[in-house]
Figure 1 (cartoon, rainbow, N blue to C red):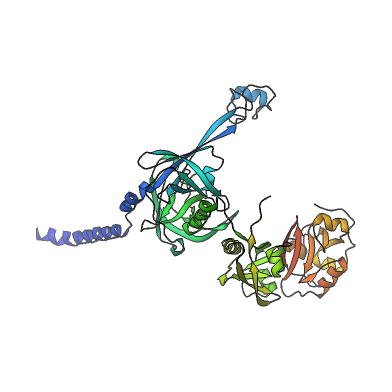
Figure 2 (cartoon, helix red, strand yellow; figure 1 turned 90 degrees about the horizontal axis):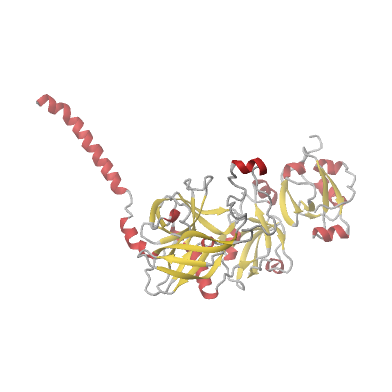
Length: 478
């Protein structure tokens, strides 16, 4: 017995130690139980109905998709075109979609995503207690994907708003929503990144998380561990249509600012400078005399815009707005967009290698509302060094292209410096290393005088849009 005791004691001690460690680790993981109990009443399911025109013939619902074998023999994989008078053509049908939302005021205001209610003819909000109320759309802002609804009710359970600016990468967060129509589903994870820029979403510094988000979660709240709403779940990155570990939420500070404007006026007013900007690459940074790739490079200034009136120019690099650093080009629209039209801001810029400050009165964001022919200029040694053949612009071509100066690129040597910089046939070169180009002779002189030991900025106009490229010239012996 004594031998057994000596044999098992170390084993039992190790087992107890391991269990204690696992228990302690489990206790360190967050418990969302109370958060869900407190928050669930303020989270809602949103269902919409819209009427669309049916495409396809009555009795042929596949409309060219999943065509039965018997029809493939006659039509292949596509159905024949619709014919006038065919029964079922032009008929209307109802479509339904689901999303999530949450209560932001006791008197019936609800926040969700703009894409959840886009085109809806009827919106129904279902609460945690199974009440269903019809909602009206107060307003929606597609640029930030925020919408505000209103239901006829009082004393609704309101969620507490947090401060999304305080979020840190690695922090625990949780989501409540209706994925695939399953009401009040809870998922949790951590903040993977902040201030994330997505294509076509220049005004939203997204919160990236690994919280499981699926269709139906859109518009639902993202909570911190204190049970405060810090974001609105909006998008996922997916190749399959389902969750793949990357989700994006709109910061609640951004969303509430939009919601307040929608409640007050039904639309959003955002600041506007009237410039076209592009990122600053490492080569462009060197060409403009920056110590690192940062800021937003102005490639074009709109006529009669706030930027034009303030004296901003193409080639200026915006480094800060009212003291807030413009780390990259995606930061500038956010900072300016948050400024109320009519207010003044101070821009810190870099011009000709020297820092300056320019005051601009921000304007209102405006409402939404080819290759040319000719004989190429004979290529000489300077153009060969650049790797292009160019032509002068006549008045008709200037009017057609919307430029005052410049030369049009006719041919590009794929092995030359211009091709390496991304210059293509049809581009109009309007400035070269800071010098305005008004003729092929001016371009040749600028090329001859340009250095070969560093990148130089070249401003071009392509399809009506101006942009800068960084170009490194080849030396004569290369």
